[in-house]
Image 1 (cartoon, rainbow, N blue to C red):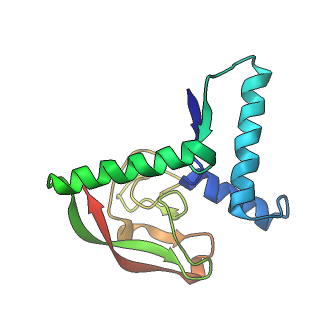
Image 2 (image 1 turned 60 degrees about the vertical axis):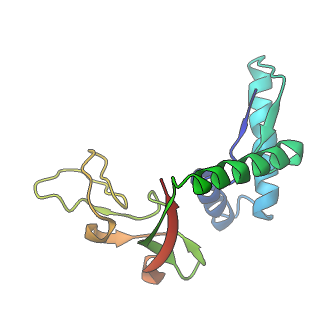
Image 3 (image 1 turned 180 degrees about the vertical axis):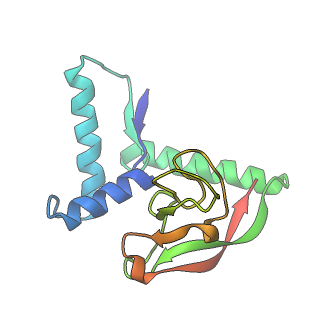
Length: 155
């Protein structure tokens, strides 16, 4: 049993890049379906067969995934394991999306660090810092990115 995570940060960023480069024309839902089928073909090319190769947003596996997620989060909340926090998140106003940590790129703010790439909260050498401290911050459309306050439920 295996499957694809249809809307994780990597696939959404890959979709954005493919559309911007003119390599894919279609909706994100069509891209998700295309990616899922392509992954099934790769498994088949290696003679790997599974009883179930589902997708988190396609067909019956999506229905199960959605209900299990609702049940899981509801149980955590009812048992007092979730806390509501207000945090600053990077938001790209031009794209109309919150940015994941790998979309916010700059230089590590840690003195003496030789990393050539810093992300939202960690550089390529493993130094950790607050996202607001990132130097020369960029994003898919850096001139339009901003920090926004948002509420999150965390463990």
